[in-house]
Image (cartoon, rainbow, N blue to C red):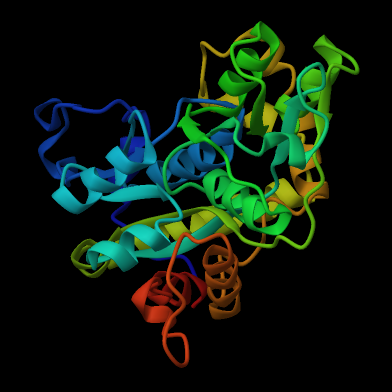
Length: 329
């Protein structure tokens, strides 16, 4: 059942997702603090599902803002420091290492990435022993996956460099500035189209883990529980709609004027990207379960990102399922 909001708040639809918006510009009755979302990445096609859910949340009277940061590390620090309310990522290691009072509350995507190398330089995992590999950011799923591959294949990279944005890393491959990285499905397809046969996808087996979740400070989750429940309801509904008809994302982008500066080629790729994401199970329904948390921790322990919990796993150390429970009522 959807949370009831003041009907006057429907006028908040016009609030944009720009950081630093002046509340003085809003009517007095609408001056409730926006929920500030911090994303440690650049704006891209894969952000559209979240952006649509945010727009739908604003239509129900909950103001929201979105700010892009240079990395997931910076975004998580912004959430801890109070400069943002909600972060995007899977900060298991950060929570374990810092005991920061943040908890994940919605599972957005599962890990489906493609390790890829320049075939003129490398041909398999063994060739990457002692070589530099580029991933998304420190603590990201891409880093965890590549660390796991080190362990599975008995190799050690000389260095991991951090370059946010799968399309940016794909561009660097095409330009020849890097020779080994990890990209998403859309960027893998771009590489195959732009340079057929030049780039080789390395095999990955037996990986099932969260790529991106939403997390927030525990005090925020409690103090804004009603607003967070509305947001989670819209996330659940948006993910259901995308899984039912992924091509609608392109229509929503036009409807809400999202990412207007997206290059024409990328804009034309929206429907294909989300179709592949749905087929690959990247956009899971339901928002997450305790069993998913256990799977995540097993993956991250194997990848060397977190320390194995002693005894039975206490999922409440990492997740708060209260917002999902409230949204489902």
